[in-house]
Amino acid sequence: MFRNRLAGITATTLLLLIALVVAGCSSRWQLMANQPRTNPLDPSSVFSDGASAQPPQPSTVPRGYLQDDVEFETGKTAQGTPVTTFPFPITLTDLQRGQERYDIYCALCHGRTGNGAGIIVARGFSGPPTFHTDRLRNAPVGHFFDVITNGYGDMPDYQAKIPPRDRWLIIAYVRALQFSENAPISAVPTAIRAQLESSTGPVLVSTPTPGSAP
Ligand code: HEC
Image (tube, rainbow, N blue to C red; front, side, top):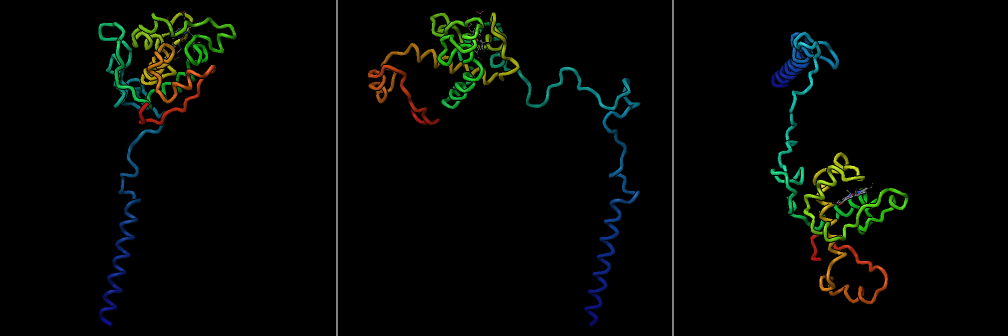
């Protein structure tokens, strides 16, 4: 009996305490919920231009956005000459993305095989050169990067549309196109060589899954 009464009193005290604590959160002494702040477009007397929202300091770079890899970003060495190697290793998955990006951004003018006979050219736009010449086969990868980044003659630049990494992947695919048009028959896997030799039209080869041997 006495025990039950004690338990009753303790429970009431506890409830009262919780009520007090909860009320305390929104009381006028609890100032954290109501401290000085500015709303969007509020004026301010702190800054000389009278605005509470200040623009970022000039040359502010968000964390993770520092573009300090000159060769990756420009395709040129610090001395300004076009780089001759890719700035990172190219995987099969990279090549497949390069193909997809090439077909989206370049094929309309350069053609799916890079022969310069895209659909836009058929409609009257200046014809780009084929990629399958010694000059462009021997041109350093940095030259291609520069052409995509800054444009070339009548070709517009793709700086704003294609991020640097994708530009490199497109170039890797252009290299694959160049090789495919200029490779010896011995470079063709034996499994499809016979098919190629007996065929008069294009040979359809299923795309290998990433990671499997070519
Ligand atoms: C709107 C059509 C068009 C598109 C799209 C286009 N190009 Fe071109 N490209 C041209 C033309 C035209 C030229 C030739 C310019 C000249 O010689 O005046 C050219 C030239 C080039 C050259 C040769 C530069 C040289 O040294 O002769 C390369 C390489 C090239 N383009 C790559 C690309 C790649 C890669 C893409 C896709 C990211 C692309 N182009 C998208 C029209 C286009």
